[in-house]
Amino acid sequence: MDRTPGAQSRPSMTDMDYASIFEATPNPCLVLAPDLVIVEVNRAFLKVTGRNREELLGRHLFNAFPGNPADPEADGVRNLSASLERVLEMREPDTMALQKYDIAVAGRPGVYEERWWSPISTPILGPDRAVKWILIRIEDVTSFVKALASGDWPLAGTSIERKGLEAELYARARELHHLNQELREAHSREHAVTVALQKIMLMTPDFEHHDDVAVRYLPADDSLTVSGDWYDLIDLPGGRVALTVGDVVGHGLEAAAVMGMMRSVLNAAVRDSERPAHALELLELFARSMEGALNTTAINAMVDPDNRLITYSNAGHPPLVLVHADGECELLDQVVDPPLGARPQHVPASQAGHSYIPGDTLVLYTDGLIERRGEDIDAGLDRLISTLRQHSTDNPELLADVLMSDVGAGGGGRDDISLIVFRL
Image (cartoon, rainbow, N blue to C red; front, side, top):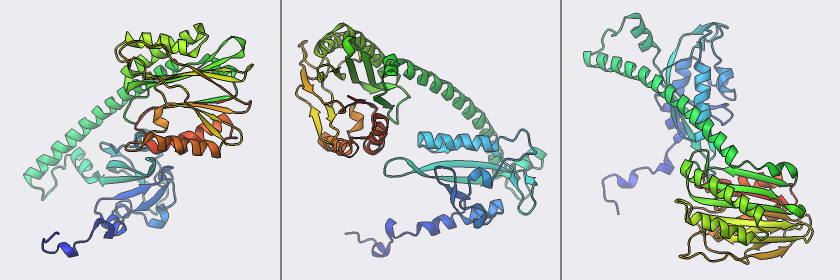
């Protein structure tokens, strides 16, 4: 029991009036919806911008505060827009260096006042880890910048220590601004390279021959745009189709490089093998020879429309799901071998077959779709089955979207997701 004096009367966090705290905060703050519509502002923001609440609430940020049309070099709107895009994409706070962002003078249409700001944008995430709001806190440093530029700095009444500190902070802020800009440009180049790499690694020309299949790929939040998950579709003689998904341990470029080789080897093995199990056996032999490839999980399934048969082999991967048009779902888990290379010696892979009815849907996925930290995997499978039952008649593209939003979103982006939805 807490016997500290006053402990019994101390308010808890749930007792606090956060609206009043936000209103009384001395720093100018505003809250945006994900579409950049202003949903709230505090008293300090209204004071520093010369606006009232009715003028701002419900308006798009850049309609309420457009750029200065008389300044051809004005980049405040562009810079702030890029910052907010980063917040929405990365779901991380974004700090900007000093920004020149002129604002219209209240009551004087077409007249803009030079203003300098130091903004910080912070995402507020909902339970699904999507951005629910963006909190922007700003500092108006216009008087400081103007005084420094005109040579009137330091201002009268400012202590020597304060003068030196603020001048130093200004110089460092400008230096940081240029460094941040260089880093963002470098990151943009790296991002473009990783996006191109992902497209090449997951390139599947045979998809163009099918209107009955949808694929999805989503990397983990803390990885680059590429990772260790893959999907593949391969047309085989006799109208047969092979579908593969796999998951290399790890994230980032190293895992992606291993994934690219594993996917290519399995693609070649599938084309040369009549049995899905034999293709996975060849992949395991390759995995044993490559650093970073051990314990990869994979499924190789072959669809034979003439015999209405699915033949599959599974190396440590979550089971295939066969969804019937009436909503009934079957887990194809008759055979499940350990991940590739997990056994001390190479052992032939197992294989099973399962019939299907035209109009059924086959779903292949990686564990990122169903796994949750601290939760048994069976709970994730139950969640997947429940969603598939409710949407069994959706077309593959719509069903893939539903699975990613309703099943995959709750994972918090902790692991990569690859998904194939194939209408049989």
